[in-house]
Length: 444
Ligand SMILES: [Zn+2]
Image (cartoon, rainbow, N blue to C red; front, top):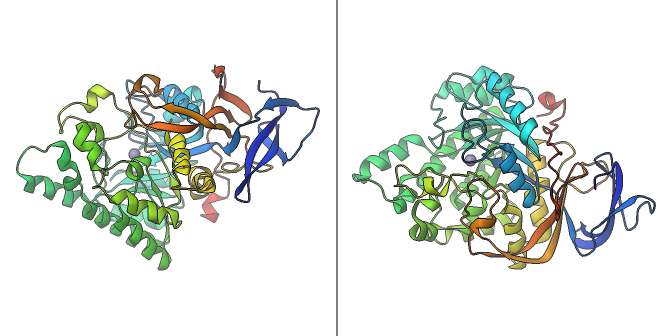
């Protein structure tokens, strides 16, 4: 059922920090009213017993299309997203071809518009040759810069290129901060073929901090908006806090795996746990949590990086880096509420309001009149154990296999359409590119 006008009735909604029963009137894809009772004549979507959260916005996914569709594509990735209550994703440029030209950007736009069931935004990838194109790319969620090599080989080392970007870019500059020279030196000094547990030393916290420092200095000097992707250590968060005090415009995200897993997962599962930046030693996640609870972190983003299990089970040098989790990142956060690590209001801030604000996504991230009717209707009592066979991402495995999670989305609405529910998917619904606002050039 996705009529033009209907009411989601009986759900509990966060109102000033506490859950209260509210009806949500949906009209033409937007939220028309949120009140204890709305238009009695409107059709009803019964949500009694559920809570309504703003649809989650995953600001960091790799949906792999074009070029790597044996791992994922817009259809499979967006179905996984919907099952996890995610209604908007921002996709990274390291596809094949990479999103590093206006032509490739248009190609990806067509593929996403044709295949995605969730709303989407796209990042443009910086290379050493395309900075003017990156600056000219309209409607992109931001420009992605790899300061150290990771999957896809988009590393930028030219100071002149970085200076030009930070001086002129009015969009968020999303940085993968790992310092290439330090990583290469670590590899040379290892003096033998690496094993999975060497990954953390080959891509050390020091390498992350060094690259971050470069990016922070550029952001500070030019007043650019720097967004730091997948922060993996407390030392980085502390640098970010210091830079903010100096006036830097810097936001950041943490991935669920850096909050919930540590090196012991690599010890047990080898390259299944290989990810850039690496899972850190025991104790580091707790230091991230402590800072996250203090409000240092703007959003949690999955860095959903699907690879097939067979690819991950190769030797260290052959196994690709990256972990999948787009369909679990909201259930994982909700589980953290049950365990007392977070409040539900924090989940909303980190999964919806925060990313909408960081990337300037109009009409997204809140359950309020005038906003898009993007909703995750969650059963807080539903318990399920994560199993590989139930993973909807094409990769077909999860680092959280065997985890018991309580609190799962049962219905997911995208702009007022029931895109996912007990009856399955609405295959006719299509995602739309996010609205970044017309005046962003001046306001950013
Ligand atoms: Zn990534």
